[in-house]
Length: 146
Length: 165
Image (cartoon, rainbow over all chains, first blue to last red):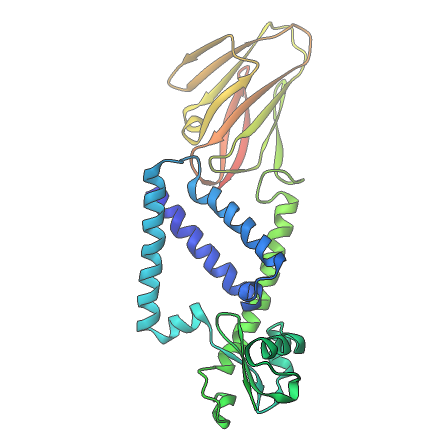
């Protein structure tokens, strides 16, 4: 029972913290974010396993984590509200060529981030060539050229 | 209404939800800071100025963790004032032993016995000298702030310990 409870507690703790930390925190993986991810993984491992390094414990944990994931995926499909809370919604950063400064500030995105996505995905040279830019729920920025 | 609705852009955004979520995000960041601050103060155990407390018995001072963590090793340090006796007797109540596993003591007890009240440990000591006993314990259960009596030479000190999950 303890193994299942540990798994459930850590899953939801990580879900809540990562969701509240904001999409930008793990959306694009800079070297620093990668280090952060490794540290979180190592810390989580200790909390998940405790002193029990048995194969049984590992098997129960893996099954528990996948089970929560499956249940949540069904919940998200059946309830748009749950989906919105867990996944969020895309945020429009540029609409018809106009920057939404407030949305950019709140989402911790600046022009250079949009330009980077524009260069990478569309080969654009400057911001005037961007028609729309959307911060997706994954943390990526989609760019639609004019 | 979505601002994208006025454009050709078809995107499932929800600006009013997003605005509320940004506010929740900022509040949660303050909570994150508060958690870090509380941890620095010792309110989550394992070090920090508020993580340990003192309790007094007749001829002993007990330094113990006010906030401990489940399944994490902790020390209870008992400072004994000089005494003419050549032995100090410590009684750990059954209640204490329900919540804490006694892993070992420093020094080792010279005798142990079990009674209905709990476990009695006898420690040899040099007369008229100060001494220190260290109990190495590990919480077996989580609990809210709970008072545990610790009897040292028939004088009880009360340890109020919160065990975090």
